[in-house]
Image 1 (tube, one colour):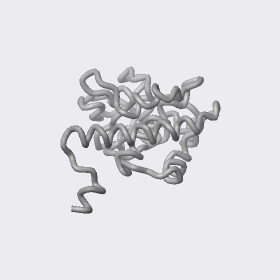
Image 2 (tube, helix red, strand yellow):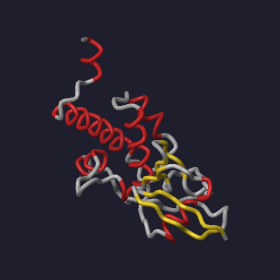
Image 3 (spheres, rainbow, N blue to C red):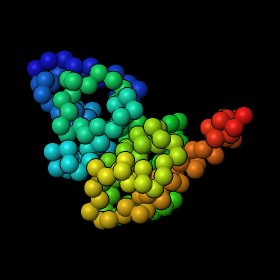
Length: 170
């Protein structure tokens, strides 16, 4: 056993774990975070996805001791009682059916939009391809991502930011 410090959703946590313990197990069992889910245990389905320093990773195969950056889970997306635009879009588009994959879908979508705020349909399909949905809500997922992209751009514009396309024309 060894002491490992993890920064999760803006807070530091010290846990005493075996070095090879998957991050998923620490998040769920030690920190009581239920967003990331155990799906396949092989990094194939995406249900366990979390964001580490802006990159979506599969926590079921990532040793917790190897993570040194800021970890964001589904619980950490909302700020000051406000849902993230991706979460809001998921509700507006009624994406979930069984809901099991939604953690992976939402976290992967958030990372996608952080790296590409205005993705095309093809870029969304490519960026989301590693997260499986047995209920086949892929079209609603794509629609929700486009909605979150628009809402984020509109909020930025309202807050006084210049859209990239207008800044390039200036």
